[in-house]
Length: 497
Image 1: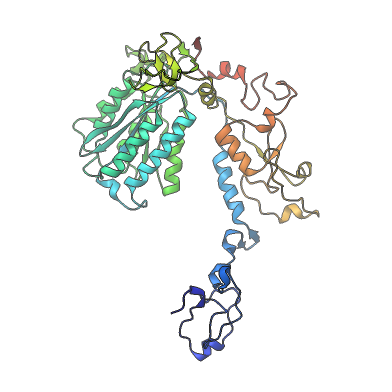
Image 2: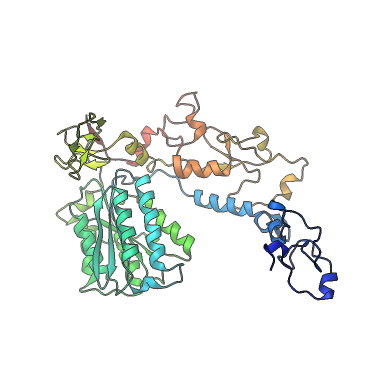
């Protein structure tokens, strides 16, 4: 047998040998210049002097263009439309709780062994849970989270409430390797465990439960409606992402605990949709006055649930990083482990190894200024950029941020009519900031709105805050001071230095 795939020629009839090879190599994957009747053909040479196989020179036309009835539509345009769909959302500043306490509940019952989501629901959920933990603490650095599982009719604690993403990810990976889905889920047991974990959280933070539910049943020891009433009394909001069909009790649970908002319960259609629904929970929920239909009951609650969403004073400390001497090793108060570096509490001087954290000695919240800044963008999101027409595209030849060249402006009056127009997609490939007026590409549009949450053009503008519209809170949200008073954006914070 020949040494390489390019030199191998299967047994062919005389008619097949005499027939000319197809131009685009669609009749086979063998080399056109392979050996025929013991003689080497005049095929193209690849690396090492061997003859190239036909499949090595395939032009992947399906990745560049799709023919339509009224013209050609590029796949790049479809990808761009998908990116714009994620960005075209309401950017109205709303009151949100930026200090969150979230319990993640994962279904680990027999229903998660189904393979309608590859490789199966269980492994895909745990993989997405790892991504969710990273993104959650990236977008909410001063928040905390705990993880609970449902299996064998009970609730199991995977990780305790904490602000260290490495610990949560380690526990999730351990469960993925050592445990398999089995038994029935129990909504009531999982919610009661979440209630116990969120009971002692401070009143200035939000109390949330995010549940990934793959079953169509729930094995509960009691009346789950009593549990829902207790969740309302404790101001706990529940959101559910379903992996099967819609379940009536899940819809009722989410609607009652979210002031009648039905969007907090969704059913995933496929893997990508599941990931989008999962990661959408990284955005803090909008603060409500109280769930509709239960407002009168909450007014009678002794803990004052109806007025618990008002702003409150919060004491915070901003410690500096302290490096020990060459031989100086001390124990941290949070893990009781020897470390050479850490942060000293600004009130009691106790040492903690990482931030953000709550001082184990005096209970003071310790954060960095960068943590506070990264959480603030949820209150005043960056405005959406608008599409640029060909008539306005002559003002720019490259992206203001990354300097990527834009498509040249076509000549002729009928240029605009010949272009394929899709919802939200710019025909010129340019997107303009409504404040500074600079033009950006789609990749910078996505990066600015999903990662840095600031406009590079507005940040580099040296004309002052008045030019950017930041005096009256009408700018891009970088320094909208008055907006926090009008929209109730954040709690008033007292800094302990």
